[in-house]
Image (cartoon, rainbow, N blue to C red; front, side):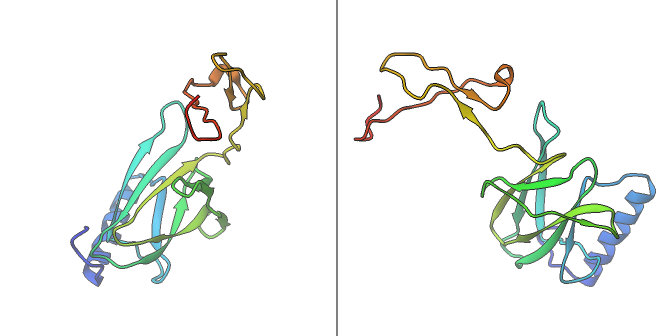
Length: 168
């Protein structure tokens, strides 16, 4: 747990639980494995998972226990997930196929006291697009489309500032 440092005893306990769960036919959607110790997990972080409604995407909120230590880890994705994105940085994470595990993997660093938000996807995300008129007059309603399909666009508010940073 968060209050315990990784020891031989805690790692053995984690491995026993992992094997029991797998024997029952449960396979995790992702695994986090310590890159400094072959086959060991990390026990000094917590993660919460959120499915994004209307998509196949999953968000992982990861927090490194402030009493822990910085740890490099392999994030192993299991089907249907094939890609990972760092939501706070707004960047895709480099993923490679691990033939021994038959899974896509990426490397992440779990830092004590730091939150990370990762998005797991079933396919690479398309770059966001925004289309609409190039100009509009004050008071005119301008319609913008986010993404390639106008029927799936959700509406929001766009604020326009003049050169003096005053709201128009």
